[in-house]
Image (cartoon, rainbow, N blue to C red; front, side, top):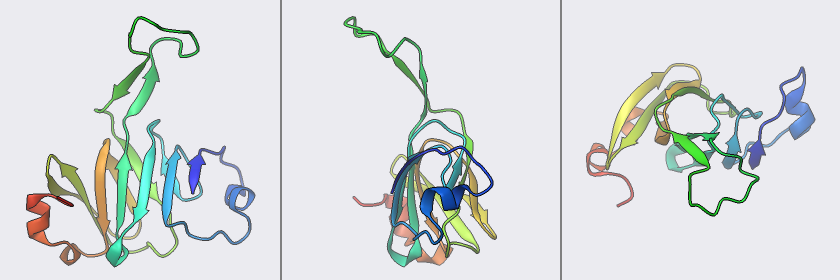
Length: 149
């Protein structure tokens, strides 16, 4: 599913997805959607993984610093990327209720950044995240050595 925001209204899920939306395996989006609440302006990618885990990639917020509709042959930057601002990120996928352990990749290592009890919601900086149903689902050696080498 590819998504680019939708103005929230009383029945916005039904207006966008119909009466019985199916749960997507992969989501690419920006802003709010029926499955994600995110105030950042960067793209997000959500992929379903093995063991009912989710892999999330958040790109940095963007700000236009020069008019993007004009031709710029000088090579000057048009967009500024903000890697320092964090935003609340909430995933609202049916079947993903209950406790979760959220890991963020830093360099080649994964670090626990949040534990949630009922829903997937955490303060997120741009980067890669792994969301697990149980902390025992992750091989600790893989966390220390990196993931997917």
